[in-house]
Every structure is written in structure tokens, then in C-alpha cells.
Length: 147
Image 1 (cartoon, rainbow, N blue to C red):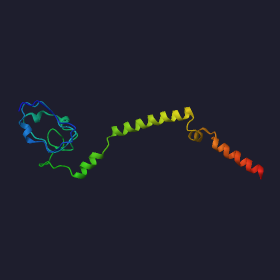
Image 2 (cartoon, rainbow, N blue to C red):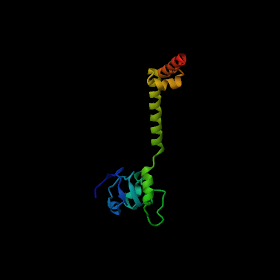
Image 3 (cartoon, one colour):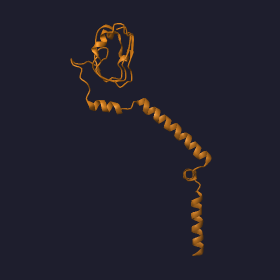
Image 4 (cartoon, rainbow, N blue to C red):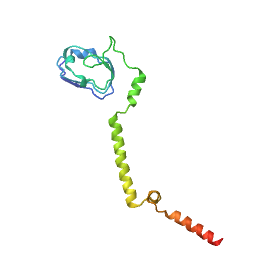
């Protein structure tokens, strides 16, 4: 009953928020963000003072203080929606991966052209034939001379 702070964020909790939590009148901080909670957010006592950030990342929640209304009954999202949400990447993750790939590619490209290794790759863009091409041309000339 004297609980003042409750943080269950990012724990993959499922189900609905228990109505019994409303009876915690000393609760001043609540963080249930980034879970898989569904249903109506309980109302009363301290629950009326918590903002959107206490519940963000729970797409199945509805009711005050969220802008998503429950339409009378808090229905959980379908299992298809939950699976789709699990595999969804945010734009930040994509930009981070793309940026790291570009930096790695530039560094490796610089290293390859600076050291000249592997020579076959450098010769593709450098314009100079590789040793194997030279050897092949030399062998062709020798065959032509002998004929």
C-alpha cells in the first residue's frame, strides 16, 4: 500500500493492467512503457496523474491519458498485429545500420586501394591489367610466334 515508485518498463509484460493498482494511493511514478499490455487503462486515484510516457510502446492499451479510445471495451490487438509489431524496425535502427555500413565500406575501400590488395579488385578499377592478364597475353604471343 505504501509503494511510491513502480517501473516495469521493457519487460515484455502481457495482458491488462490490474485494476488493483488503483488502490496504491502513494504511487507517484509509474512506468509500464515498452511492453505488450492490452486493454483499458484503469482510472482513479494516482492513475489520473500519469502521462502518456508511462504507457508508450503498448499498442494494445487504450483510454485516458492516451488519445486512443476504447470504444466501450478494451479489445486486445490480433495476434497478427502483435507479430507484425515485433518484426517492425524503426527508422532510427535503419539509419544507424546504413550509416555504419557506409563508414565500414569507405574504410575498407580506402584500405584496399591504399595497400593494393587484393590486386584483382584494384585492377578492375585502376585500369592496369593484373599479372595474370599479362601472363595470358605473353603466352598468346609465344603461341602466335611459334605458329
